[in-house]
Length: 411
Picture 1 (tube, rainbow, N blue to C red):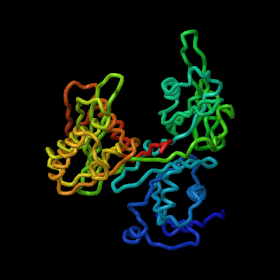
Picture 2 (cartoon, helix red, strand yellow):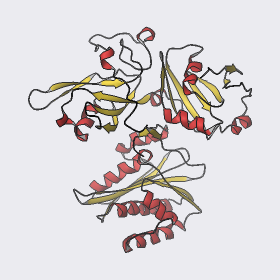
Picture 3 (cartoon, rainbow, N blue to C red):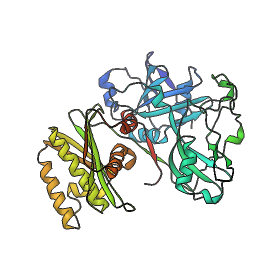
Picture 4 (tube, rainbow, N blue to C red):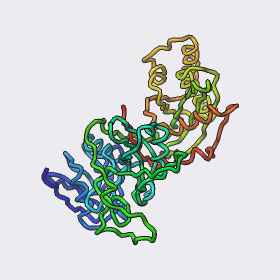
């Protein structure tokens, strides 16, 4: 595909397209191109040059123009008139090129420019020569945790186990981990499926000749032995999901229920957040049920009661239980008397709101509620938090506040 021209309009705005289209950076014209609905915030890491952003946009292979607004300090705002281009770039995630790394996440009004929150990317890591007796989710998770945040595990191959992890491009990659097997232990090396690695500092996003980091004493040695060929087949592509703030004037309720068959305990949790993504309140309630669907419905009921207590008028309901959302919208009927009775009560609660919208969301965009449901399982009595969330919830709230994406392997 031929390179598309980069046409400079002003020191702050450019249009990258084929053929070239000229626009002025005024709000009403940006609105025509979905400035608020189809925009991504990008952060460029690595080599700095005039053509840096031009080179990275080439990697996207867009079908239409894109408005590029420079925000300073290598932050850029991209607005896509074509929805398919927006989805393509957003789902592709971080893009690597020679000496460069462009991380993107969805933009929303009032979003703060934070280099740390932009520097996370996902990659697959192989564990070569690992004995199959260690190919369990728990063991692989523990090993991979030393290198980053594990996201997905693949043991479908007969030769090597693979783990998808989230890492910070500002930090050197971990080359391996010592595993204690009770008999002296062994060293398990890691090999990364990435297009490039700096053999000087161990970071991704640039090559050795562009490395800006001084070498530290006792630093690990990096080389081609830390890289592995990228696997192109055998697994469906990752799709990316993130939590989104509700519209102005609305409050979003995220809920989740959980039942642990091994312990026989159930619980439901949820939280309320406003249009700025700010925390309002949360709850975690143990539930007397032995059914996971009833736990989901009970969590929804608890969230609605909390919202009514706080005089919420416009509520957007999100949960990762598709059955519960379909029952709420009337697309599905409950199969048991207990389910029907509780759903009838929930519909009565909905009468207390001026406007109600409900939609299904994948678990990857519902992680704070999932965490609260797990708290509820361990609790002995209902708990509520107002204005100040529990400490363990803070990382999840920070993750959502910056709209960081989470990949989902199986849809």
